[in-house]
Length: 477
Image (cartoon, rainbow, N blue to C red; front, side, top):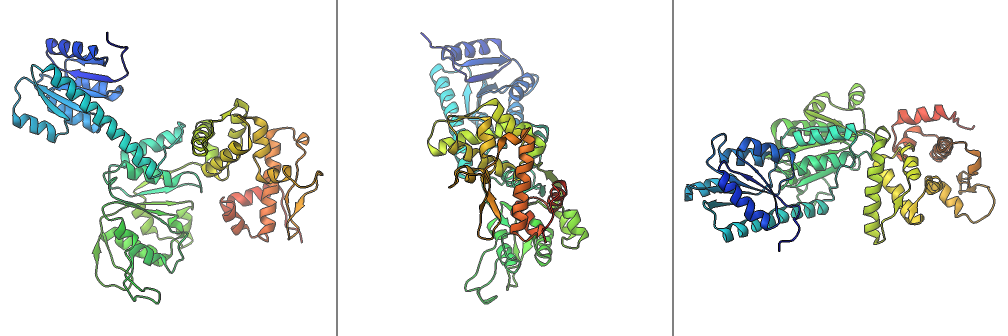
């Protein structure tokens, strides 16, 4: 007796009722969920809206030819397996169907055993394709873009539209907000996905070496050039070049990048030969490039070359509704990495996370979740969030003395103090006091160099000035 139906859905598209009934009876006996329609237009609507695992499609139909259905369906879902069926089968028809992307071709009336074997093979191949994509994604460390807030939904939709093109994209947003992840998905979903994605952090490379890094150099072109070097543009040929922190690139390097984008040619440092490159460039920055243009530190013509498509990744504080989804995903991921049972958040803990300032964005949230997993019990509580939100408070709670005095570093500045939680009327009061102490400590550590402090704590300088004014912080003489 057949067992309970599984969740595998097979769609039959055929304008002959008898064929649909026969196929449905065979497939349902094998426990598949079957949907059938008598025309290709209705079939395409089902493919768009439903999760279909396999399609059996007639070739000769009145309202829409089966080959058209095949072509249009694979534009919507490229990995959907199709088995074409026809009462007028020829070798030429089978070859044409195969070229258009069909898994196999079966003649009418279908042979029962051949049909079932073909269906099983098509479904197994589909499963292998999906598993391969998942494994490739894991290997490339490309995680899902988590969240369903309006800004994130808009970013996902933009990626779907833009990725298959070769349009250049400029991604803006604060440090830790997820710009690199957007760039990775633009590559993953592009026609260049099988070619390399080469990443360059322009802020991490000294200005005197950036040109060699991007364009390569010839042996002997400068003192330490003991052998020829292939640059990132050449390495990314036929693939994608991701220029992270493009706002930190020197003007001389900007000029060469502009020429490479205009002419699709580069010249190695110390070389004379022009080398053709076929590269899609995606750039990212945490700076306001229009302000940098005003300050003559960024080229306007390069900005316009890079910003064919603009994607802004909002800070985490502007999409706090996504925090529960992200925190729970990080929790499951980190617990799996540590080989421990997955921990849960109590609702009050999630609400507490949603109200935090998150100046470090997604990166800070992940670090926080990892800290909570290590230091909390099976259920992460509101008290855990309050206790472990500030690393300085942790070091004091594990302190070496029992009083409330601040421990002092070698330069005399307080690094941590055990907090009297009873004096805070609300969680916001606690956050404000913690943030004030943190900023004051960092400013004093950097001798009140605001630019350096802003870089250290990964916020914009203007944002730091606002915080200094908000908390009435002043430099002591």
